[in-house]
Image 1 (cartoon, helix red, strand yellow):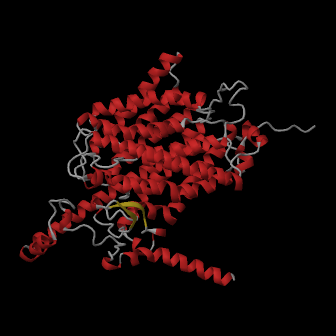
Image 2 (cartoon, helix red, strand yellow):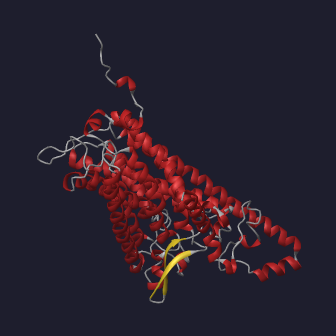
Image 3 (cartoon, one colour):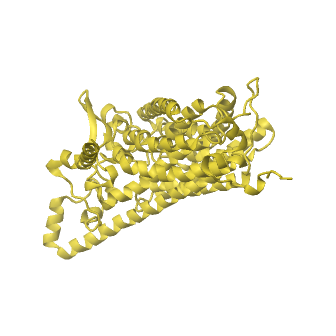
Length: 525
């Protein structure tokens, strides 16, 4: 019996790995693990309408062999620059994990610091493994190649449904375990960059659910969101899925446009945090008998502020890196818009708190900075500097209003404000594309001629597409994550024992005490 099960499991793994190759047997692209054949004369101008055809290149090689060799060198260097840019930006985004760890730990209490740090540490490893197993394949397995990186055509198998004469992509089927035809230099580079984005999403609920979440159920969650929830919505927007096709099929702008992930990354994480926070319930002592909230201050505000600055630094890789091209000079505009929006978010939240509550609450200011960053993440490539400041300023105020609404009206305990920072402002960021995109960038994006324009610049259809994206994200992520947490709670309890919560989770959950010198030792007479 055991031998039979082993054989069946082996057959399943082989089938998963071989499926893309079988599906694309007619014209199976050849992987290029070393990258030796990446970057040719065709990449001098890139894979655009003005790129030379195969016939042009053959003629050039025959008539001007020296020029053809020079063009190959230039093309290879162009792609190499884009590779380095994409990888370095991926490294920057990976460093954001340190920012999340410091921010969340600083905003929570000392008795749970080790536990909060442990979740931020292990969500990176767990999420990466889950994404490697199948998350990347579901998200990017049907994207059909990345022109700026000169290849990736092996990612050519999207599972779609046929409705009304149109193909609606649901998930990719190439890239499981990064094996088979996925052993390709472009695919591996794309995996690294996309993986660190996924990791940001997976991290967000650890802030909302901090100080009372069992580590065992957290581990199961880490695999689930990285393997299924994040990849599916990301496929619909970034992997050639159905949301990206709304413009091509229904003349709704360019379909759902989310340049660097306001909805794909941040709203997904924020909505997942909302579902988890509802089911997990508030921390002990958070609410009085009459329902009014008690303040449970974080133990280390300097740590939290330092974490927010690290996040702001990594965000340059997050946003500008999403061009996947160091030769796309729009990166300067993207980086500056990112910086301006963060400043506006911090400033507007400071003014709001100072005006209505008498003091410029530094913790809200720090979250306001992050709110501005989240909101500009989708529109950063498509707006001018004035719009970037307006978007950031609105985000800072939205953050303050939302934090109090979540705490006082919804009665959801969110120690770090992640639902408001990422969920609410992720939705606002997606909406901002449909309002403020000025038509300077995005030509032929998602297969639609022309640049991306929002309502204020003449294209109301783009706003409709963005609203569809927001609604889809909320319904899909909330329903799936709510059901997941409900079912998981029956199998592996989400909530720690009350006595452990009162004492602190460090020793009980992760066998470490962050501040052992603060622990009162029992005296023996």
